[in-house]
Picture 1: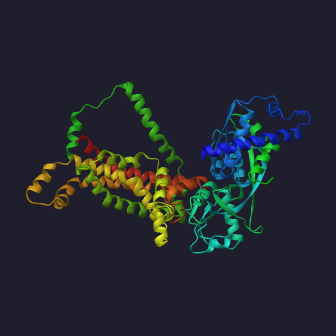
Picture 2: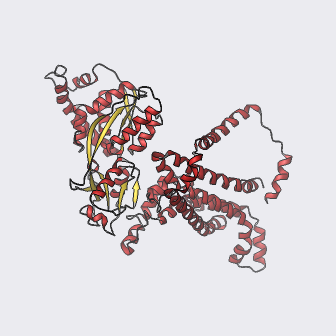
Picture 3: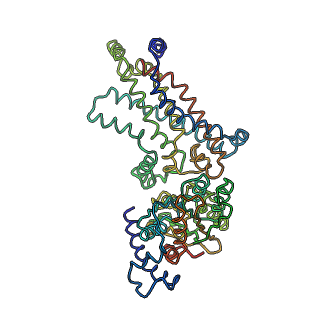
Amino acid sequence: MTRLLRARAAGVALLAASIAVTLAGCEQPGAVTSGASDASSVPSSVTSGETLTGELVVLAAASLTEAFTELGTAFEARHPELTVAFSFGGSSGLAEQVVAGAPADVFASASTSTMETAVTGLAEADVGGADDLSPTLFATNSMVLAVPRANEAAVTGLADLAREDVTFALCEAHVPCGTASAHILEAAGITALPVTYEKDVTAVLTKVRTDEVDAGLVYITDIDHTVTGIELPAEVNTTTSYPILALPEAPNPAAATAFTRFVLSGEGLAVLANHGFAAP
Amino acid sequence: MSRATPTRRRTAPRTIPALALVPAVLALAFLVLPLVGLTLRAPWGRLGEILTSTPVRQSLTLSLWTSLAATAIAVVLGVPLAWLLARGEFPARRLVQAAVTLPLVLPPVVGGVALLGVFGRCGLLGASLYDAFGITITFTPAAVILAQVFVAMPFLVVSVEGALRGADLRFDEAAASLGASRWTTMRRVTLPLIAPSVAAGAVLTWARALGELGATITFAGSFPGRTQTLPLTVYSALETDPDAAIALSLVLLVVCLAVLVVLRGHWLGQVTR
């Protein structure tokens, strides 16, 4: 699966690179000349003369796994001396790690409230420079009902979750996708309970993918060829915002700032859009 | 058996060179300090309130009864298995022995995935169970128990198998020569002989079952009161209420300490005998 992911990531990275060429042109009219087809001109325009080395550690919400893996590959291609390492997981767990002083450079969360937890925690821990942190929103996402490809339970919408014979999985209530799920079920007037509360959205997706449950609430961006997504009515669906932050105690501050900027750049946003994320 | 130990202890000189003492103390500090830290950070003032709150009581109750059930299953199935391994003659016995001890070293998450492969809704047995009776094991307390049996039963088997190997076969031969069947010999002679080891193995199995996390979260999911056992509550509470996580960890620590204190004498007796 990893190999498949890599192959796909590489493909999209190529695509992203070609988009970057055009977008970089938009941002810095002087930097890129008409020789945009010359790939070697891309790194210089993005790095703006700065050489990033060492390791960049990014803590990111589980729902960002695929998009950020691709962004990481693209970023590494631009900075050959830099290695990007990701730790994907439930946002609240990652926020906890950030506050506990995990040696990370960037934190990207799936909700503003978990980011708030991290920022407040850092300030309370008297981390230098933690008082004036300003996370930046870079994407929004909404939820969808995922069902296994076979869909033997014939789930067609939220109402089916109330059926006796239908089992479903949700994220734990304190993870952003869990908060959103609770919101949606309440709005839809469904009181049925899931059979399991999972640590993060990918865990919910896995339970659906392996056909262990009949349905699960996940992000729109999580839907791939392994599961079927059923759209939710707009009036019950919720939108979650994704903030990103270069951490104040980043072991690699230059790379942290550069990566954050890269995510917010035209190229970064294009990759995110490619994965179904909406602009903030 | 263990009564012989103290006399041995008195005769053996017990000193080690100073050079070895430094790393030894370091090792001890490394093992003990985290536990001291846990105790220091424990929210003593809120302890009562935390331990009696509904979610904690739910997971305590669930953990208690599932781990006891898992232990009972492990004893009923594990003792005969140990008997087979210790006394039975069959091909590829070493391979079987390795398979039995595998869960001891296997990452529990892998155990959970393996259990899904067998008892999951699309698993080897799980699929037929579901198709024929509409029964799903995953996400039920039964799944919790299966996960616990899987990771903990080897402790019982290994412990009982060792005792059976060490047990004096002449008692069995004497019983047989007096006309006792193999079943009677096992029941009236061998089992009473190894009873302390069965008990020790059972306590160890119970402690392991009580602490099971990886296989449970993978195979049984996490639902308060149904599949969210004590370790899963600790894992989840870490992100929402660290105080509660520490309080619960303290409970598990005390239980494990108690188990070890009870067992230490017995196991030492076994080893030095």
